[in-house]
Amino acid sequence: MRALSTGVLAVVALAAAGGAALAHHGWFWTTDGDFVLEGTIEEIYLGNPHATLKVMAEGELWHVDLAPPSRTAAAGFVEGVAAVGDEVIALGQRSADPDELKMKAERLTIDGVNYDVYPGRVGS
Image 1 (spheres, rainbow, N blue to C red):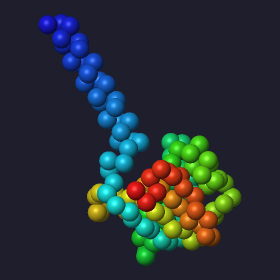
Image 2 (image 1 turned 90 degrees about the horizontal axis):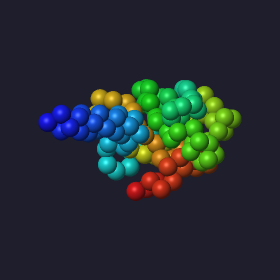
Image 3 (image 1 turned 45 degrees about the vertical axis):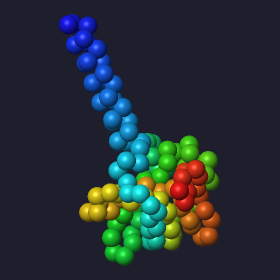
């Protein structure tokens, strides 16, 4: 009985840890289908755990999740390619919560240049 209890606790602990990882890194919180957000960059963050943008679109401030810093940099989206005040088009999926002004971007377009931070997902 003790071995069974220990095994159950181990499974529960792993599931909880895995759930936290999925919650942070997954796409489960987004809708299916492409979402396009066009607006003005209000803030840029290129650090861990994910790069992010704050984008003003139609009078509302959106939170845009990008990829982790290494993937974002590999896409060419590095310090200096965009600045506060630049126009941006973000393609990705929006939050499944319609009251949440948040999306996860696959691609950013700034000054006609595409930055595919999740190239395998663009247009999927």
